[in-house]
Structures are given as C-alpha cells and as structure tokens.
Image (tube, rainbow, N blue to C red):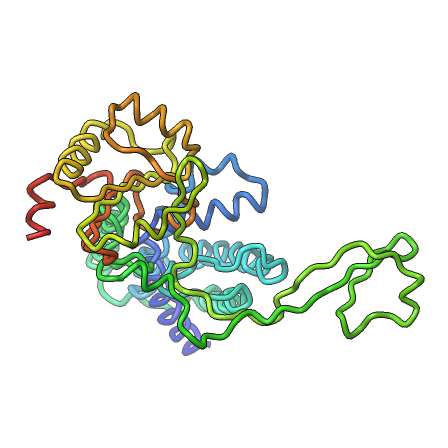
Length: 371
C-alpha cells in the first residue's frame, strides 16, 4: 500500500499541476466550457461567476498538486481531491452518456478529449486518489515543514499571478487556429481528396401511435401498414473538417463578405467584440482613435460582432466610430482573441499580433510592426 500511495501521489500531483497550468493559460476559454455545463444543468444563475470559478479551479489544481508532491496537509488535501474528482467523474460520466458536452475542457484546447476518454481519465484519477486517501499515513513531508510552507505559498502566488496575467493579457501559449503565424484563409480550405461525410437516409414511419426509423435497406415488408412521417440524413462517418470552418462574415443585409475579407493582401486590422453589451467599457475613445488613424492610412479595417447589427449601428453612431460593424457567429469570435474587445493585426490573412482590452495598441506600435 505504501508504494501504491507514493506512485499515486506523484502521478496525481504532476497531472493536476499540468492540468491547472494549461487551464490557467486560458481561463476565459475554460469559463466558456463551464457556461455549457451551467446551461445543461439549468444553473445559469452561476453564469456571472464563470470566470471566477474557472480561476479558482485552476489555482486549486496547481496548489493541490504542489502540496501532494511536497507531502503536506495530506488529510485535508486528500478530502478535497476526493470530493473534486467524485464531482468531475459524475460530470464527465453524464457527458459520456448524453454527449451534450463534447469536450470537458480538462486540458483546455491543448488536448481535446472525447466524453468517454474524459470519463475514463477521471475514473483512473478517482482510483489513484482513493489510494492517496487510504494511505495518507504513508506520505511524509519531502522537506522541512517551514520550507514546504514557503514553497506552497510561492506556488499559490505564482498560480494567481499567472492566471490573472493570462486573463488580462491573453494566453501565453495559444492553442487555437487563430494563433500568431497562422494563415486564416488556408485553415478554412478542404484539401483535394479529403474524406467527405458518409450520410445515410433514414425514414421515419408511424404505426400504432409510435414512430419507427428505418434505413433504405431495412424497410419493413408490411410498409403499407405504416404512415410516412419524415425523412432525415444521418452522418454515419464524419469527413474532414478544416480547423477553421465557421469563419463567415455578413453585412446588415445578410450578404456574405468573407471572400472580400480574404481578397486583400495588405495589412488589415480586425476589431473583435463578440457581444457589445458585454464588452469592456471605457475603451470607446481608444478604439475610435485606432480605427480613425488606420482608416485614414487607406488600409482595411474590419469590426466584427455577434450582436444585432441594428443595435451595433446605433452603438457605433453614439460613439462616433468611423466604421460599421459586420456579423459573425459568437463561437469563432471567442476563438479569435480571448478578450472583448480585442484587436488583431493581419498581413494578408496571416495573424501578426493580437491585443486584449487591457493592452490596446498605439499608432506607433502598429507602425513598428508593419515596418
């Protein structure tokens, strides 16, 4: 039991630190995953606290992992870990059964896990943590208690600082397809010869007040006894999906302008405000100045939002902006830049630089990057 406890302690400690750091690198992205769970379980009253909860989970995972490796506060840590893993095992188990959440967000966007894989990972962790819980008496402090407490305090302060930094100034490591250096247009293309969706037609018939589904090759012999209800296409094998498959820009008339956006090979500036009513306030003057100078230089400026364009027009007029907003779905906007608002500089369709709401670029910064 002693060796099982020691091995479990090291494995769980290292895994929790890695998991916590990856999520802390993108707390806003992790909060989006929490919002999905809140909606599924009808606990939307927690939505305003999603970012705070995501930060606390990240910090706890890092500090708890460090405490495990140091071998201090073992009983308290074991209890907290056990409660946490039981909760997450139930959560990922529910996702594995219902497929309502396709990725738990355990390792952010660095490593995507299927619902079943996430559940099995939590089951293994649960077993390891049970070993730790039972064998806490076998865990000895790695160093003297004062030094261990100092190390734990430092890990807490560092994890808090790192979590706040990435929230304010964007992830240190970007795992999303809109990261610096990527060509957005190229990532929207489907290579020639790439596998396509395999679709099967399914027919829905009613008999005796009950609906039945049949494929084209499994229709019943007494089909005349059934009443036709509907027909649907079911994907039985997913084809190739490009990394960026939802980058679609629309104007107020519903016309798609994506090709126009991609057509320019010049430097262009992109303002991303996924929800105008949730955008950080007090930056309107800075945004107006940046856009005015950029447009005066003759280079393309695009402003994207998922808000209603009628409301966006009213908002732009009130702020005396010299640009108009265009529409895009909320999901790609959240992926482009983890900030609202956020600004992206592109050369043609290659991402050059990103800025969060807390570090909007100056005219000099933009000019220097282009030179």
